Amino acid sequence: MWLATTLILCVVLAGVLTATRRREATWLDKVSATLRTTGDDGVPPQTIDAALDRLERAATVEEDLTPRRAMAALDQMSTGAVLADETGSIVMRNRMAAPFATGRHGDALVEAEIQARLTDALGGEVTDAEVRLHGPPERMLFIVGSPLVVDAEVIGAIVLIDDVSEEQRLDAMRRDFVANVSHELRTPVGALSLLAETLEGEDDPVVVANFLGRIQKETTRLSRLIDDLLDLSRIEAGAGDHLEEVAIDPLIDDVVAALRASAERSGVSLQVEHASASPEVIGDRAQLFSALSNLIDNALKYSPDGGAVHVRVAVLAGDCAIAVADEGVGIPQRDLHRIFERFYRVDRARSSETGGTGLGLSIVRHVAANHGGRVEVVSQEGVGSTFTLILPTRATTQVDLEAVTGGTG
Image (cartoon, rainbow, N blue to C red; front, side, top):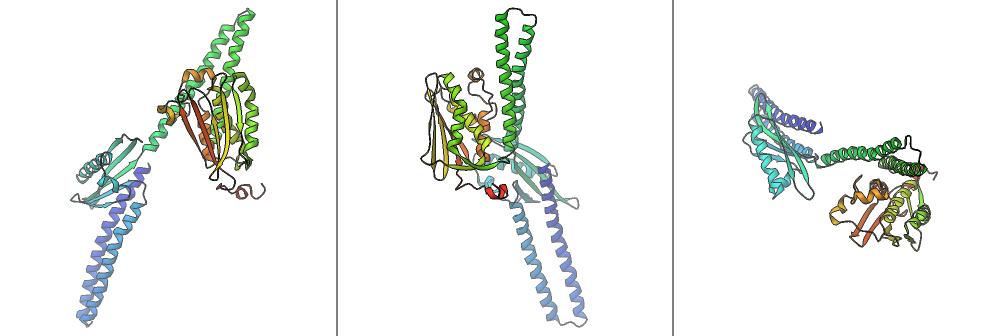
């Protein structure tokens, strides 16, 4: 829809340019004829000549300004635009389309498609094409060519180049999300149904106890999945309505206290090393608690019995860096760029054993973005992984607490 609107605007712009030039020429001819006629009635010839000179200069200036205005407007578009006259000669190429003219490899393929669309458009056809450029990163370009018609005459052609890579990526993520949610919900619900059906009429206390334990496990898994989905939905909406000064050290202590029992059950040592001075950030404490809980919980799940998880806090260049390091199996390099995607799992079998929902790291990434920060990961297979949550401190944050709280915080 947006691309179609842009195309219409460009076509109208080109039509206006052409019509304006024709009106200017007609207007100048009429004024010239009138002045010359007036001169025959007694106006001195030198006065007529001076007036004509002024009119011609004004028309020339306006004619020079018109394409400059059009070019400035086209340069503001996020879509590439190439404008050609009736002979196929390119008369305008905006900022987004300029790189294709002199580019190599993928850009050269795009330029060839631009020329093909121009040729079709000059023949009176509206055509389009998609060009997929295998990156990294992979890009998808949608190219549309349309003739410019004034008074039933093709006076040129325009080609628009729209980068739809992000739209396609988001569409793919939405499709995957729906498919993954359906799959993740179907598994525990199906298991619960089967277990309940098996229990019907069962009298053996040992069997009943075993099945009830499995029902409890599946119920807990389903509850965690729903909670994570709700958390992710809320966190994706933004930084939250409860921004405050959050001291990092007490926050980490609270998270560690909540997970200490889980660490002891797993036989994993959980160690914390605070910064020399406790940093503070402006943010939503609940979101920050959720992000740190997910990072430390993941580290515990993927650490071997007898291993250790280290949580370290440091202040670097005005940012608070919270590193969570484990001694687990590590993450293959091929998976590092995808681990923050919703429901993406490096090892699905291991995730099923640990009860993970596949949403934890996605929550961490969104919390970091909401607070003007980022999350980084370094991992080596067989050695372990270190996830670092980096947040701007209270002294450097761009969030104005008084503006957010109305001066009451």
